[in-house]
Image (cartoon, rainbow, N blue to C red):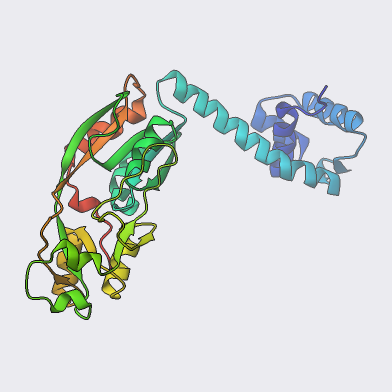
Amino acid sequence: MLKLSLDALEIIDAIDRRGSFAGAGKELYRVPSTISYTVNKLEEDLGVQLFERNGPRVALTAAGRELLKEGRHLLKAASDLECRVRRVSSGWETEFVIGMDSLFSPIALREDIAEFYACADQTRLRIVQESLSGTWEALLDRRVDLLVGVAGEGPSGGGYAALPLGQISFVFTVAPAHPLARLQRVLTKADLYAHRAISVADSARRLPVRTVGLLFGQDALTVPDMRTKYQFQVAGAGFGFLPEPWARHGIEAGLLVEMKVEEAKPAETFYLAWRSGEEGQALKWWVERMQKHPSLTRLLDMPS
């Protein structure tokens, strides 16, 4: 049986801060004899001296300092647990996880996050990023609670609700020095097949992976996210489709050239999605918030 209790740790903490048993008693609304008894009993049970007693003033021994150092972590954890339990009883999740496609930037949610914490300060918030089918998989595998900006309508089988946030168009680009940039015509499949594509890796572990804008047997350099894809295309290492705002950014800066291709990539619809049947307050807050501010362009992780 444990000899240490949270009540005893709270008393030791109060004695250390107040400098005396009497001061701790006033803070905790307990008579000095109760404070003395608790400390004496704990010292006896542990077989160590926790305080040096110099009249009414007391000071922690080395053992006492070590006990209180770790004990304060326990007190904080207990306090946090009490708050989280009260939150659960009121319908607020203890932790809420938002998943975003790697195309988008978590920092774009900074104002939303600040307002969320203002009304849900005891709900821990976590943001993770996946790519392509990996975002849907994270939701269905319960690794995230809400998807903000996920491509496509999702896998078959249901189990989730989804609301469209909008569409993003894509533009085929290459660096000015890339061999394809010298061709003054619409690029054919044969033209593209002779060069390397830059592709974003699908982070799915279980669902079928998506390949976007690649020909069968196409040589491709696969990178972890859209920002890296942009950087490699600017460096002239390959070609590919980029989100229209990103492509315009690079074209206006003279870093990229837009090219016409036989098979253009259609605009992609991005969704807000969550598992069906879940009714937590944090989920409700975020769904309502994102519907009020549905702009996808504000979420884009624009290249610098």
